[in-house]
Length: 220
Image 1 (cartoon, rainbow, N blue to C red):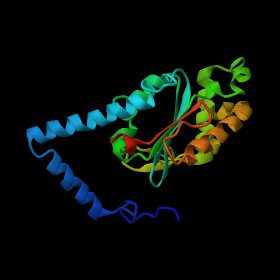
Image 2: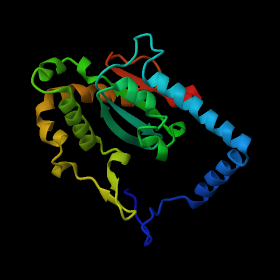
Image 3: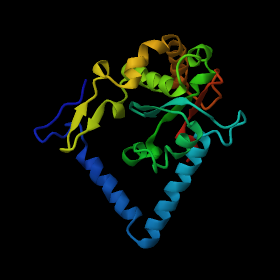
């Protein structure tokens, strides 16, 4: 069932009581100068640990390098799909939020899992990269993943009037949308690995070496 909206435009499923509990907890955690400093330090330590694991700094397989696509899940389902040409840098910063907006709205403490796939390591990537730049391939894969999975945070955009507008992937004229048809074989390979990562139930190393799955709760 989709989300319905009240006359004020707010989602009718919004839990005002839970929101007040959250705000009250934040008041307690930041009520003094010392408490606010401790809160800031605690959050950054966790974000740093998560970013270190995501970027593969401590992974026996070595750090993540180059292009990748990634997905972030909440307990309620897929939240966000993105792509990058500099996986180590982007993934390290993803939970910190200095150059990426996601952690500002959905704190990494509530992320259920993150799946990272270094798509150049998939079998069909080499032939495609002989014809299309990594940048364009990454954008095309991102577009096709978003159109296929409809992640919550990618499905709407903010407007200057304080509202939200739905994203229409089918009518997009972006570079990723225009090149989507050219990455068909690679996208098919990517889908199979993505499903494995999305369904993995433990922190064991995924079968496919191009895939990494991180469960933030295990780092707390």
